[in-house]
Every structure is written in C-alpha cells, then in structure tokens.
Amino acid sequence: MSVSITLLGRPAASDGDRTLPRPRGRKAWALLAYLLLTAQPPSRERLAELLFGEADDPLGALRWNLTELRRAMGGSLSIEGDPIRLALAPDCVVDATVIVRGTWMEAVRLPGLGHDLLEGLTLPDSAAFETWLLAERRRFAGISAAILREAATASLAVLDGRRAVDLASRLVAIEDFDEEAHALLVRAYVAAGDLARARRQAMASADYLRRELGVEPSAVLVRALEPPLDQADHPRGEARRARDRGPRATEALVEAGRVAVNAGAVDAGLETLRLAVAEAQARDDRGLAARAQLAYGIALVHGGRGRDGEGATWLHSALASAEQAGDHLVRGDACRELGYVDFLRARFDRAEAWLEQALVLAPDEAERGASLGVLGAVSSDRGRTGAAIETLREAARVGRAAAKPRVEAWATAFLGRAHLLRAELDLAASELDRASDLCRTVGWVSFAPWPQALRAEAYLLAGHTEIASDLFEAAFAVGCQIGDPCWEGMGARGIGLVHLKRGRIDQGIEWLDDARRRCIRIPDAYLWIHAYCLDALCAAGIAHERPEARSWIEDLATLAARTGMREMLVRSHLHRSALDGDPALQAARLFARDIDDPVLLGLLEPLAGARSG
Image (cartoon, rainbow, N blue to C red; front, top):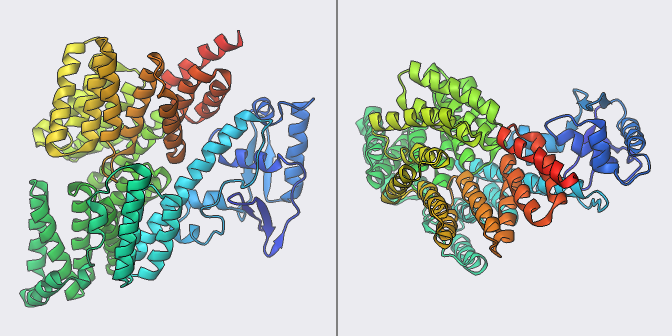
C-alpha cells in the first residue's frame, strides 16, 4: 500500500485518492512528526516524558499511541525498539521530507508548501513539545521560503516570467521583511514584460520596508528594475556587432571580466562579463553561453555586494545551458556556487543538496575540495562540529595536494573556527595561523579578516587581551576598507568583547549591538555571523541586567529556529533559562540532541543538576 503522509498544513494520510482514517488520540500526529523529524532516535522514557508526562502511566500512553499509529498507517511504517526507530516503507512519501531532500520541482507541487507544520495542533499540557513544535514550524517556514526562492529564480533563468511572478509572490507572503525576496518579485515582473507593475511593486516594497523596519532599502530594489540582457539595448547591439568576430573574442571577454573582478575592478569586470553573456546568447552557442553565464554569476556573488540574488539567477541560467550542452564541468561549478549562496543565507538543506550534486559532478580533486570546504562549513553552522571537522580536514588535505591554496585556506579557517567553538584553543590557533599565512601568501585580502578575527578570539579566550585587541581592530579596519559587512561585524564583535573584558560595559554592549546590525546591512550577508554577534550580545545583556536582553534572546531564537542553526538555538534557550528558569533549560536539552558541541553539552548537565537539586 502506497501511503502519502501530510504534515504541512492539516495532518492527514492517504492511499491514492482515498483519505485514511485519522489515528485516534490528539497526540498521535505529534508523536509521528517528532519521530520523523528528529535526527536522533529518542528513548521511550524521554518520549513519554515529552508528550505524556501528565498521564497516570506515561509509558502506557506512549505504547497505546504507537499502536494506534501502526494501525492507522497500515504497513507503511514500522516503529520498534528503545530508542524508538521509525522506518518507512519504500513507497511511503512524507511531504516534510520532500521539501527538505527533494527538488524544487517536486516541492512546489505539494499543497502544504508554505503552511504550518501540524497546522492547528496545540498541546498546552506538553510545554517542551510546544517549544519544539514552534521551532520546527519556523524551520519549515524557512525551508518553504528557500524552495519558493529557488523555484522563482530557476523560472527567471529560463525566462518564464509569469511563473516567476507567481512563485515570488508566494515567497514575499512568507518572507515579507526580506528585501531580496521583494527584489526577486520586481525582477519577475520585469521578465514578464510588465514594467509598470514592476515599478509599482518596487515603490510599494520600498515603502513597506521603511515603514516596518525603519530602514532605507538598498540598491538591490533599484537594480531589480534593470531590463534583462535580451531586452537591454546596449548589450544587444554590441552582441550583434560581435557576431562576426568569432567565439574566441567572447571567450577573451569572459577571461578579461574575470581577471578584472579578481583584481578589484568589480564594476568594469561585471560590465565586461555582461557583454560576454550577451554575445554568447546572440551566437546561440549553449556551451559558450554556459561558461559566460557561470562567470557572470560567480562575479555577482563574490564581487558584487548585495547581488547574490542576481548571481543565483545567472547560475541557474548557466546550469540550464550546460545541461543542454552536456557540459558537466560548468554544471558542477554552478551547483557548488548555488550551494555557497544558500550556505551564506543559512538555507542549509538546499545548500547540502547543491553541494552533493557538485561532488558527484566534480571532474578532479581540486573541484571536489572546493565543494567539501563549503559542505564542511554548512555542517559546522548547523552544530554538527564532529562531522564538520572531518569534512574540513579532507577539504584542506585535497586543497594542499592539488596546489589550491585558497581551497586550503578556506577549509583551514573554518576548521579553526570549529575547534574554537569546541574550546580546543591550541588546535584552533594552529589552524587559524595556517589560514592567515595562506591568505597572505596568495594575497587573498578579501578573506583574510575571517581567520584573523577568529584567531583574535582564541587569544582573548587564552587571556592575551592586548594581542586580541590589535587583531580585532585590524580585522575591523580591513572589513571597512573593502566594504564587507560580515568582516566588519566580526571585528566589531571582537572589539566589543575586549571592552567588556576591560570593564567598559557600556562601550562593549554598544559595539556588540553595532556589530549585529552592521553585519546584515546587505541582503546576502553571512547569517551565521549575525547569530554569533547576537549570542554575544545576549550573554552581555544578561550578565549586566540590560532590559533589552529578552528581546535580543527572542531575536536569536527566531533566527536560529528558522534557519536550522541548532547550536545557536540551544544557546538562545540557555540564555532564556537565566531569565525563566527550568522550562527554557528543558528546551535547551531537547534541542541539544541534534548537536555534538562538547562545550554546550557540558554546560547543560551541571545546570540541570543544579536546578533539580
């Protein structure tokens, strides 16, 4: 029997066109969702306490509900053992699993996409489960938004403007405070040929962001009104005149644009690459178009501040062209870069899906190492530090063996961060020093502040405040010079920590607050740094009894839940436990099952013992 289980929206199960009878008991769906969505199988005792703690016989209530689930779902699942392990039949489909692991084409067909997990279900007598459910609802809202963004971007890439408008409109309904989502809708209207509607949408979006967030929109909304290449007069005219020059001229433009961007002449390089794309498209050469689109997309992502949304569209275009041309190298590069874009914005499930494709398509060890480096960073951001260390060590080894110092520098810097988060200071210092040396050797100025700020924190934790202060100041200065809000945020956070260390409480909190605002001033900033700055601000606010501490904690909890930053989610509930006591601590312990950071796990047990005693 092929069964489809719906958890997004009103929970239900069906066998073909027939809806199956609902399981008896109001907690059966909650039990099924928890078993399906938690990473580690729970013990029967823990699960009984979580959902049936108020019952006279919690374990008996659990057994009854498990039996009811087996009956209602027929032979589509088995639930056995202690810890409890749930296994689905091969032909059983769960909508929540599809949007996490499937393609956007599969996910957009789900009727529950964008709806709440277990819509309408509340269990006020199970407070810890309610906390878990709220976090999961936020996470699935984030995943739904990521799917709609990917689908709208892919539709734009193949010039299906009407479909892009529909998908981007649904995205804005979920991500109404996301400027890039609004810009994507504007670009969709432009692609659909409705320029008047695009202008009205841009004005309405700008007014909405000013009114609700109190900030001026960035240039992203203005650029969204620019016509596509096939509608722009200048590139089209240049392309027509270039048709007789041969494909080598276009290849030369691609290389010239790439070199210019890497040398820091970003605007000139982007214009050259834009012309190369127009020429390649005018020639109707799919392979050449794929290479030009890829180069332009990468340049927008890595060189154009705040232009990841545009870059992703061109990466999708490159992917489509490369599939037509049978160019697996371009396909692999495009997948890796799309994974990188999703990594920055903490769309982890989509990032992993792209990066796994890139690994399959990697033609050599160097390309494999680059994808492994980003994949390891994703694991670290999710709180899976053990897996991250293993992946990043392999990425660094591959980068070193393939004589790719940037691949090695990236992997080594994130490896150092993983050790830093685990308070393994000697290992962190060694890796971060290596990363900084590699950045100096290859002149990678735009990345160097990252390992530098992390190394400064290792010095600070080891008690070397003066050295840490100098390194934080240097990282902040370089971040400001190159206009990178992420590195500015890391530097400002460190300067704030130094002020706190020296007893300058007001200055310290002011710098930390500035850091968390500074690092997200463009729509495509690295979100983990925002969470990292918020975490430090929460700790300082609690320690010094600031009235804003509760709102900072809520900001961190919301961000961490929506993105799946499980380690940061645990931290947010640990902060909350300092204000609210045991309920928040129990939530922290619940979410800690999905991470392997020994520092955080070590904090939880003594606190639990102290509270119970």
